Length: 231
Image (cartoon, rainbow, N blue to C red; front, side, top):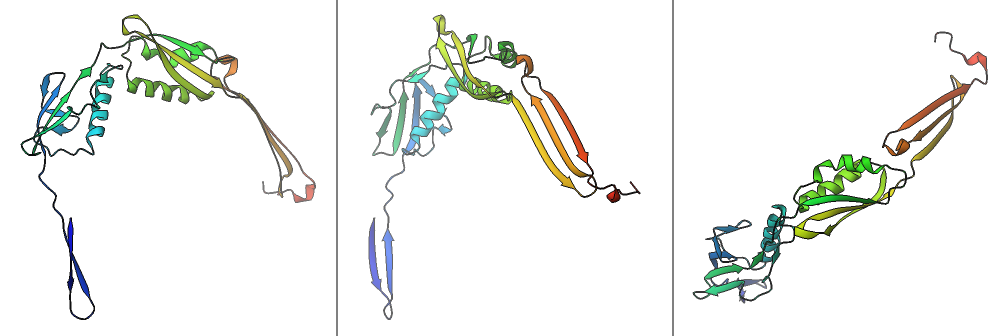
């Protein structure tokens, strides 16, 4: 860009900036593994091309493919200079991606590690939907969420092991919480005197994610003269 300084009346000055944006590049063609496409993750033929946003477009497109079940899909030429080519004085852009989709990966088995008191059937029952499901980022996110919703683990980690024919075993590693809680609340009230409230609770009872809670409360009046006869 250029700028000019113009002297105005008195001691004031005016600054004029002149910016030359150059020609706008328009997407004229999109090809993925040789196949012509009308759009790519929101970027359509005829749209202006933004090179700064293109990496986001590639990431979004790959995420879409993975969520279709092609979890191990890869873009082979994302760092190739020929992915984006300019023509006609940089006014036209042609995009050419090489994508390896592979085959859809299905979950074959669930492996659970780290449980000591919790029965594995509790986790298996919660994640019953994974068997024969396509492995996708959305599935992995749902598994994380459902394990956390059990409320009996301090931490969890979900990975996978690749088997034959693109089948995978989902691997869940957890760390159990301390399931016993004891609460004690002493106090004083003018109408009932000294009071003590206590509760003992045990979550994940017998490793089945069930809870048992016992609560007790007692009080001792320091003076019977303070008894409210109307109550």
